[in-house]
Length: 418
Image (tube, rainbow, N blue to C red; front, top):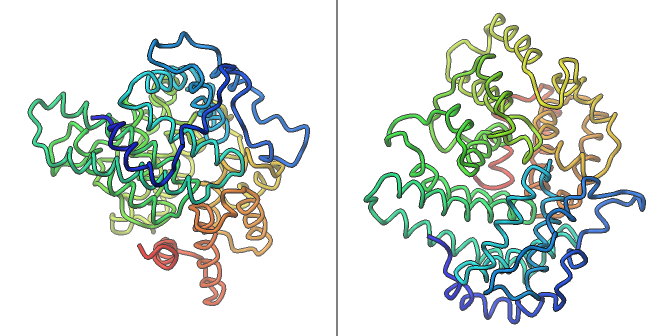
């Protein structure tokens, strides 16, 4: 079930008149991709050291229905990959083929052009304004309606139904990814609310049974893995419950299996942190429901030792990424401040930020978060998280105590109303 080009085009006529007129009129695929030259202040900074842009923009064999003056603009996707994907080389080939495929189809061409317009605006200033915001809202409304229609349709063939659910989930998570850097946390919650029942319908577990987290993380479908990763990370950073009950099994053997399969199913290339950490924090989160777990010193010692034994693709056992507290702050201070590292250190910075007690550490975190342009913009997810950290820091400072898990939940409510 793909978005209807005709209906979406009609809805957006008033919102973004002549939007297709923004498409370049030259077929040169290597020069049309606009990037945010202001991503870094350093004139010598190379935002694409791996040559992702050139790989993605290699001239393809055009489909007979593709207008050659429109395709270059759609390849703004390359700039998005460079700015928002931790290791864009991992998806460059698949992204190029997918964009060309979508643009070759009458059913998805308009939607692809509109998404490219939003990406183009974001890459120029790392924010979007009224027109692009309206486009994004309309795109979100369209995929939401598609999801509601799908959920209202009784499944006939289970395998075909799961395939359709995964296709709709793909559209929803694409819009969600755009919203995470351009709109508020409350808006992103709405996108996840819409995607959750679609994700559940794509799972093989019968309704009412827990979802096997390890099976999802090792599943070849990218969107299933993306949703559960987002669900777990959202829980850790906001204190909100997960959308579903997960069956969480954690062991060093499972972590080793994920390490061996990372090139096939791992998501470290997307977010910057390995799947083993997702399993670990999901398991720790599940322990909150186990009476006495937080006071079990032997369990805590086992977790600390286990963390040091987990193997990662780009880490050594002594890597500072495996340490917490002051070790993490040493890491942050030791990395030169710039958008590229800070944008992908964002999630661990937020998690560590809740636990910091030294004002000097808090000042470092403020500087690093607000130094990322999209986090400094009011009304964005990054800025909302900064407000949440300030709320926790003020409350714990006034009450003379360290932060506890419930503080992030209260901060989320105060900032987002959720």
